[in-house]
Length: 313
Image (tube, rainbow, N blue to C red):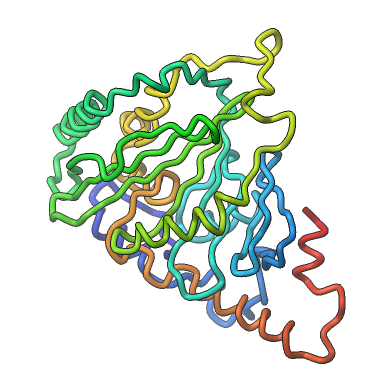
């Protein structure tokens, strides 16, 4: 990812993708680089908090950034952060994927539609909505096209998790994938978004499930079953509305396509081939050096920065 603060409507999707593909450096020329500007926590099997909503047992192969540092990381690298961002995790090795967590406190979502999700009708809504949006765009290079479901909407009642993956492409036939998972809670929903490239989606999705999803639990008091109808707000939409809102088409009407592309790349899991090549190269190298130092240095203090960060959570 790379910094870019002055975006104009004339920018094309490809220009944005090329910018995102570049390694990041958040320091001015000649400025000394900090060892870890984002207070990243290296996994040792400890439990970290994903906002005030969930707990995650952090696998030793993973690194974690809390809400504040996730927002800083996004802002430093030309993306758009918000108060909804509550954390991020990614592998310390050379795997190019990351999981972003967001929380939307929009009210308790009733899952009564769990057996009535109409994937065909939802797909038609996506296709038609994108066509209408394309008509408003003068530059064909900015057009998006919905192809179909890579994975049709599926609701796991045991996990209270709704997931779906949408297959799309640009006017230049660059492939895009939109993968979403939303976990329903007492007063809203938590977005768990895997960002990777299409060629590695299946393998990285399996890694995410094994290393992240299976170790993630909603905190007591915030769980779906903790909902109190007498005191808690209810959302004015159900599972269908959650899916339709997930692709950012509503946002598109307000912010314009260019802003939406930036949002989609980060917040809704839309990626293009090689879009995250070099992702976090600077940060990952720093973490590797820090990890190696912790494992080999005889003078390493017992209260390492990773432990200090863990205690801070």
